[in-house]
Image (cartoon, rainbow, N blue to C red; front, side, top):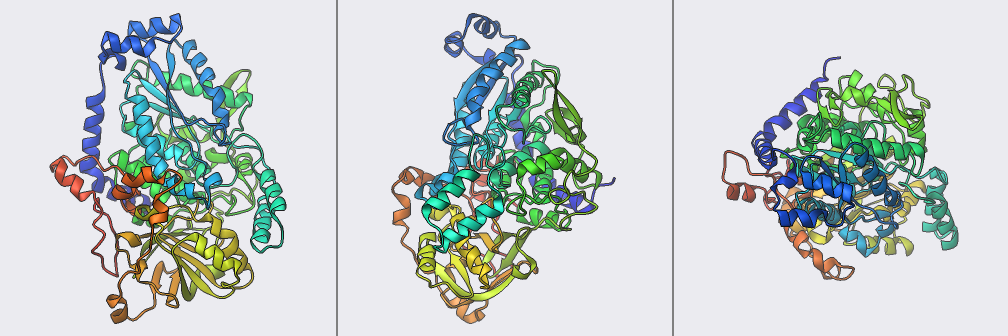
Length: 638
């Protein structure tokens, strides 16, 4: 099947746009490689410190400078249900490495923040910045230069992107990502959503709500809705950084443990001392990034990846923007219905055919690049499989030809929707994205008066006081990365959803994030430029008519041009957002973070080969004060 013209067009544009930065990145990758094991660069004193605690056999291998050493970089903690299973993984990994003549060393741990715990709380203002913190922690772990490959243990929202950004800054090292798997299915998602709305309406109490939530999130493993955590897993599969089909095998099972051991052996095989040296910086190239966008769209994945994928690409010297997402979304069909885009969870998705089915369908339709490098070698077709146990060994069989449940997973020939459900909105309020895959057709265009809030707490207070029982567009501003770290506003969903169910025309417009679990209420999110950077959302006043049109791709304040241009920005007191719960420590992030469309990142692209580094670093700072109403694209990296 020939490649779809839109895939070719977007990929060619990304390659051209990225060329000078990617060239520098690859040159740095080659410069970091050593002949022989990486630890050969260390002095005797350095090396002795590096293996002092190890048992004699491992110590001898590390002394001899022949066997590869595999780093374990883990985001384990036992509060985060998705990461609790990682407690057992280092032992499995070390034994598997010894079995093939290598050594595995626990290089370091990274933070692992649970957005489920911090949702609607002050700690959520650290969530986005935790991604780059994790990248830095990964760099600290690998900076010992003892390692020839790395295994990355992570699943959840900012953790996988952070680990991958860190890994790409050590792009000469092979990388295998090792998931832990989802928890088993709990309370039905429709019932969980219903009880949340009843609680928001005051019709059930806290005890009933807590019981419902406890039945939903009930054991070790990833939450089973298709939010950012499980979107991460889909992307690691299609980018070829997982062993095929590893994403959704439940924790603490023989197959899960066998996959972890197999991932270790593969890391050894693709080290420079193995048979198939495959550095992660070669795996994550322009085609792999475009494939990731396609898979995200085809499965109705998290809007957070309109930030994270941009940042991941940047770490590899690749430049993408929201136009790329929008153009691909127009041609990529929606193949999966997983909550909140449907009723089923990821366990049903896995049983219906899982990641291998999706990858094969998209390849056969010319919507993915097959000619990519993965941890298995050349070609994505090898990832159209699913794992099984044969004795104690993992074997892979072709993904099923037919979906096991067409209410959950469909072929390209019979999609749920002909497009991917992610849209770019533009207009005099800026540029934003909206996910419509869970929004019913009748709610995709909303024109209503604005009610302006400077915090989600103010909106919830107005809801509880009965002030929002009408048609309106909630403008929740000063929620961007510079203002307060760009927290998710998912806690607003039950309130807004109950108003929509009551027949009100409601929508959300914000320079903040919504959630990987964005649902049925139309939400224009990540509005850029953010208000604190001079964005026009600051001009909106209570009562202004706002038109959000997801079909036409527009976001407009219906205010006369003369009046609009004469308005200034309404100020807000953000001092309370900058202290408490550790937020003081993140002032440097708020001061240096880039715009949402640039990944909301605190690091810059590698300098292009044709200009001095100082000049490139200046270009990488968002120039957000000057914009036109027709095109508020803020991307110095284009």
